[in-house]
Structures are given as C-alpha cells and as structure tokens.
Image (tube, rainbow, N blue to C red; front, side, top):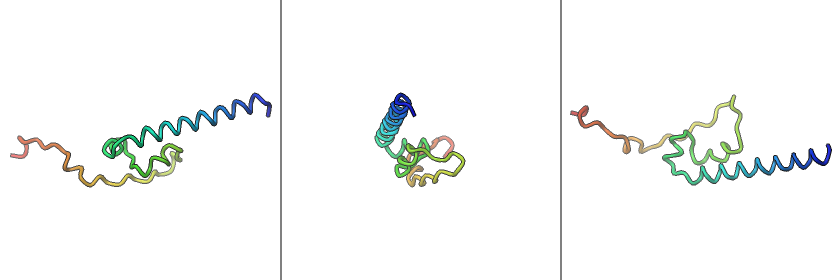
Length: 79
C-alpha cells in the first residue's frame, strides 16, 4: 500500500467517524415523539448510526404507550 493510499484510507475512516458522531448527536437531541415518527427507539440509536444489515430485521421499536392521548378526535364523527 502506498503512502497516498494509506493517507486516503485514514482520511475516509476519520470522516466516516465524524459523520456517525454527528448523526448520533442529532438523533439524541430529538424527543421520543420525533424518534417514534421515524420508527426508531432511543435505545436503537447507537446501532442505527453504526449501521445494520438491511437484509436482517431491525429490532422493533417499543410501542408508544400514550399515543391515543395525542390523537385528535373529530367531534362531528363522535356524535
């Protein structure tokens, strides 16, 4: 491996690490509702950022227990 290839490899690894760190920080700032909207749970953020095998199933997100509390009901259809 030439010196240039080594430098390029190190640079790519560093930029990939920065990208993962930035994505992790951004996802951690979201609240649980926003995370539920995109289909992940807070405990899954680390695995999601590190990458996962797209052919295998991702662990299902935990159900959001008070979703009904935030659902709007149409008063006209309730009568």
